[in-house]
Image (cartoon, rainbow, N blue to C red):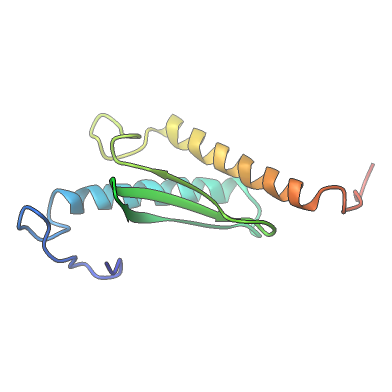
Length: 125
């Protein structure tokens, strides 16, 4: 699927993806992923590459937030539409968003610390 294309083809119900059903869920998931990614970017220095989008898996569409630290492998987190939703079922509540973002940022920072170890000399004591 081309995420830049507003026409995603037909869904199982015969409608056009993006009109309702899976298309609506994908838009909500993409919005949630980008919201969490933005919050993670606020928590980490600019050296960390943070992306958020929607991926397809065997269990359906999932929002995916990926962080590439300056050192070490990428860190990812995925969540479905049912896992994090507000009363409308479309957005991650603020407290959940902050918890997911903080956890991802902490994992990314810890991974860099573990990769670097004691190789760096502190600039101050």
